[in-house]
Image (cartoon, rainbow, N blue to C red; front, side):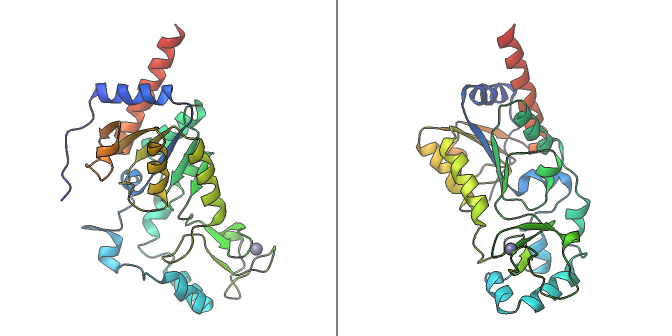
Length: 265
Ligand SMILES: [Zn+2]
């Protein structure tokens, strides 16, 4: 059982800020813990969506491909239920805004997220790969083009791509579905340049996301973790900051700002 430990000290936050400023190409890896403070319930655990509604089938992609019309009908019927309600209402929290700020400051170069909630985009993050997709988008399985839900003609199901007539599917990656090539390529390219990974709100155990963090560490890069609980990667981290992303990341931005000012004066 995970146990909560003390919250990150100012010294630990300073240490993380120092590493961030020393690194040449820091990137971030984020997961569900990032959005809990935006009111998005976790999938697993007490009150979790899957605990309540049952886990999605492990062969969800196969089911979709076997009968796309039926899968679309079911998805449309479900779209406003409790699964999408919290996602639609959610707003970025101070943690999302802190990462966007680090990017605007030129400190953070890219964010890889496992979240489908669109909140990094809404916070203004530009360099971003949503490796599990984005719940607000629909993706062409042939050419990879993405469309907003509102732009897709749903009068005939399943809908098809206006560019190549390929089959459209919600951008959210189903179990058994390959991670979209473009997102994966972007991640690989940024991870290969990275010398620091800031891991926030994820235990970094789900591949391929976890692989990017481990790859950078194995090359001699640094790992900083921001998590409420001790996780599987805590032991590998150079600095582990305990606490919620919405609380810890703004403190990190402040420390980075202060250090930069001090270096200039
Ligand atoms: Zn297409």
